[in-house]
Length: 205
Image (cartoon, rainbow, N blue to C red):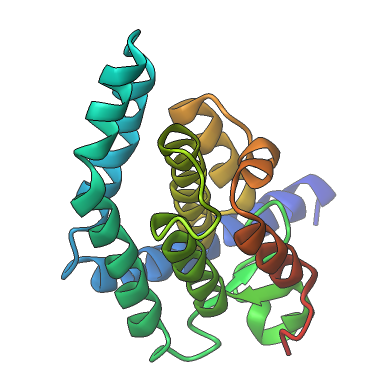
């Protein structure tokens, strides 16, 4: 059989498996998100922070940012609820690949190349709670900036789980004009250190 034809067949099989695999992940996360208002609250905050930053008067910036207190606490609570709900899923169902592209069912035959999305959600929940409670005593503007980064990183993780790391990177850049590395540098030390340990696989398995 012609080598080109064999490669074409392999590519076709991979594409089919990838679509099926990603649909399962999307459905799984969507099922847990359906009972929450997390996405709506995140949209409110990210748009609101942008609007506040564009205000020329500092007093007006502060005034706008102070209106989001209730939504910030709601987001933190909903992310914790999502993390708790996902904890009930199996490790196999909640695994995500570390490669830039989607390798379907890697958790079954190459578990070392996967990480636990359940643990990642708990990292995000703890990080958001840390910033929302302002445990680092940031001023209101820097706190909003750090919260934005926390939310962007959470979105990136969800896109990564549902699609791939490359797709998540691209969506972050397109939607928010910021890359993953910059976001990671902008989150709290609590989130960053835990995230990097998770990424390295320290204590994962």
